Amino acid sequence: MKTVKLEHFPKAEYWDAAVIRESALEVLGDSKGTLKKLVTGMLAAFAKTKAVADCDKCGGRSSSSLARCPFCGDTDADEAVKESAAKTERALARKAVADVVPDIGTLDTSVRKIQKLKKIGYESWWEVGEECIAVQKNGSWMARVDSHGKPVHRSFDDWGKTELGLAKSALYLMIGLAKNFTRAQIEKYGKTHISILLTEKDEDRAYLINELEKQELTSRELMKLVNEQRVARKLLKRGKERKTERKTELLEAASKPIEAKTLTGIFPIERVELEMFARQHADADEPVRAANDMADQPWAKWSLNNGVDIFFNLQKRKDGQFVLAIQGVRDGDE
Image (cartoon, rainbow, N blue to C red; front, side, top):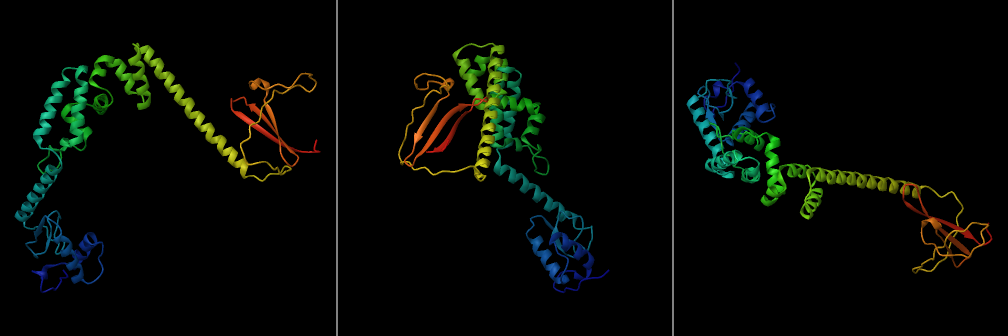
């Protein structure tokens, strides 16, 4: 075994160069450089570790969590020291949990209360939801720890399943009741109506609750309103999508060069209101009259100062969108 001769380190004659280089790569991310530099770097890194132990063979001090000594490779480190360090680590973990969450008594009180309320049935679901929200908010579900001081439950959902016997869907159903309804509404609307309302988005739910306040609705009538809301939401979404598509089309059209003939018009910078007239047949002999609706095919004419006339035609397409067609004509043009 190749050893390291560093006189000022205890029992340095037992230190293994290969083990040190391997450990330095894990601890420092670097196995290059002189052995003295690597040893110094590792000792500095382990000095920041709270749970440490000294190797009985070489005297190297390192983290007690390591399976072997990073200086000599020995696995028979002082077990008493390592166990003492492990106890310190567990105590620190328990303290870390205690610093951020209520004590176990608070959790036990909540669990007993919820278990008692669950036996009552639907009438108590709102109170169960309120208590679960409190446990989730204050973090007391983490208060139950194992022998190492670490929380027993991986998550709030896991706590609900393990200690309350509630599946994730049931847990959040009750939380949803407490978050979105008052106690009085739970009693007034009943389980079926509430279950329907919970499936809807906040804005739709507010509308449906408003309708329930105005009149008594059966579950069938409430579902009819729900379906109408869903259809309206889809139509609104499609309208927005179509508006976006149309905007894109207009921007693309505006970016293309104009190939048609152009003309220049001179007009005053002021508000101009044009009266729109009903379109007449070419062979019709009737006086000009104002347009009253789209059936009249409204049109208007604006005569500019330099002999240019602008004609406006208001049209309605098959998809219901209004379009204003504009055409410019110079005096003398057909």
